[in-house]
Image (tube, rainbow, N blue to C red; front, side, top):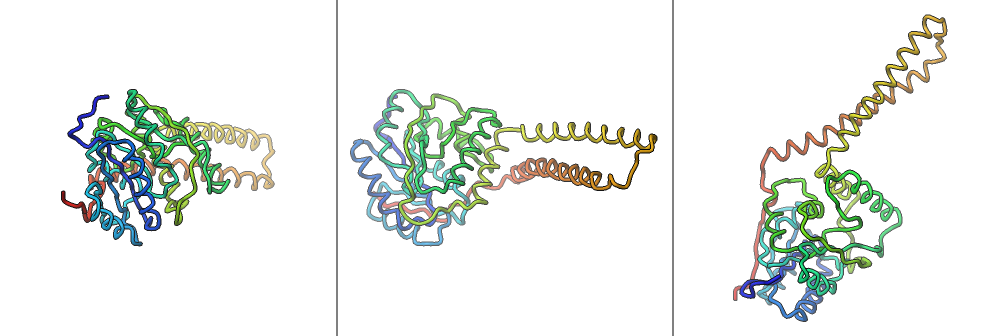
Length: 316
């Protein structure tokens, strides 16, 4: 790939949330890697409504380095929208997306750049292991990625996050996608082009605690499935037909039993069990439909995806 050297060759996009303890170390490691690449670069730091000193540190870094662009969102919009905000501001011909917690090593960038030189448009990090993550969480991640690969309408590589190097045309196409409930790794995979994996073992957090609560992880999981597949709705329909058939059988059995004199009060327990089972199925199906209707409602509002409160960059 031929890159216009008059433009910024590389943008590094870092969504930040309450990461004041690790930002300086991240900046140091990113600079060390980029200086060895001998290319023009910028670092875009997006503060997603942090409540600690994250924005103060971003401002301090921007004051001493003109390659730093700091964006402060008006509130906490969530990781996916923080990345989306950064993608709308990056100027590089290639964009590295990396979290600020240093779990994903910046030192993989040269290998990613090499693979993109060979024609890849999406070089994504694929995790072979996760340090510092409880066993139950690892099992949840594995189960989710396998479920997603079955339900999604496109191939989404398992055990991947947003850590990746993408080309300018991928960035431009993602910026044209208007949906609010964003699952960026799926959106980028859906675009196609040549996609290559770089495998690595994910480190533990450099400092602080993860901002991903169980509720936030569930939301991302739901967005990933409902954004790329209507199979849950089809599954709900199939369950409806199956239980309708079972109910029909039950009705026929009850009528035949009544005329054969087999009706007994003793069947009350099993009858209630069936009623409760069918009722729970109905609530499940309604909930599944409600998820999709809720997303349609949010999309129809056409509100901006994010609001940038402040921008900081050193002149010159």
